[in-house]
Image 1 (cartoon, rainbow, N blue to C red):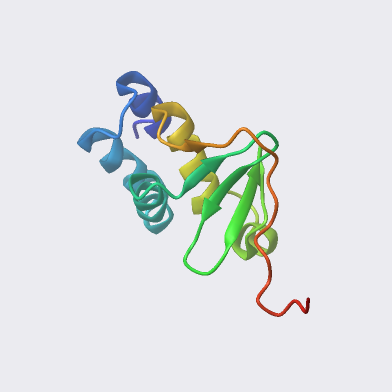
Image 2 (image 1 turned 45 degrees about the vertical axis):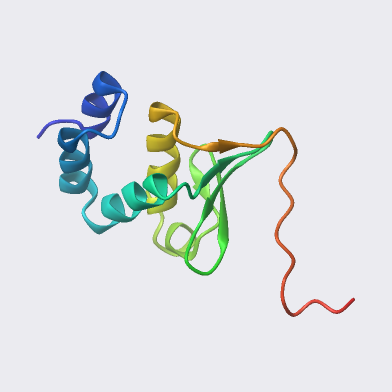
Length: 109
């Protein structure tokens, strides 16, 4: 099997071959990660990477993610795959500030 990261790094872009390789390696997680990158849902702050999901924002730092998939299943989640893709392809929005979690709708005040 071809290493999807080798393919992606060689092209430096989300080419059809890179997408196919990522989906083959990571299946649904690969598909979700590619869509997140293509839709501009990966953000880089001074202190963290953040991936905007359907219902929340997830902090990704090195080999850690705040999503339930990572916390309960362990291993690689689609958020961390998206960050790696975005970093290699330079497809992320960068903020020159520290990340602050979005306010919770249940907060009072």
